[in-house]
Image (cartoon, rainbow, N blue to C red):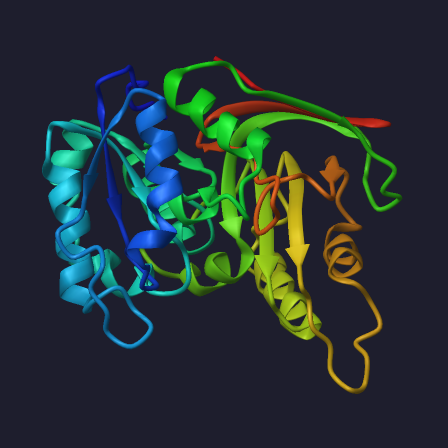
Length: 302
């Protein structure tokens, strides 16, 4: 798996909005943080366009991302915010120059489309982490933002925390990290952006889904063979789940555990990543070592 070059002071980070529209004031704090790290910031030409819920038309959003992909001076590209829309533009993009000169693509949620597309088609690593929108004062989490800075500059990532979740399954595993937002993994299934999970450690998280949707998506992963041959499973935030008047009868975590009960790899719940305030950076495509016991230990390997 190809690792883009780490950033150094003076390098340029491009900001694009491939999905939901964003306002200037929502990015001010995040831009200040990126510049405080010593980076130059370049804004997409169409960054603040609006078309209904989107940050401009599909063509405008694709044009901004294409420009950043092709610009040799831009060493990393971070999404302004998530929402929905990246899957609408992914097939408009030409990754020819990106393949020759890889750069970090950063974000989570809807950015799962790009994480999976470049991992599957080009074997290039990317960073699942907070976006510029998340760096506002009222959304700020020091650990999350600092972990992005470390990932970008090559400081080794190693997360360790105590856990008391009875749904965890103890064990140790090594493998390449893959995954992202569960709804997007489901949406990408069968497409050219779909991922091969065999022998890998799968990370999943989601937001604002009905519990039966979680069950349906896990059924799809299982029936398509994506759960059977994992090395391990990491479950991040399953945030703001919804239920019907007649209850589904299980939590999102219980649904997930049920679908992997027959396998024997380690499973970790409540990992601090995803649609949670403490959204720690994960290098997708990197080799990691996962240990689950009374503590969860996730170490990124060189």
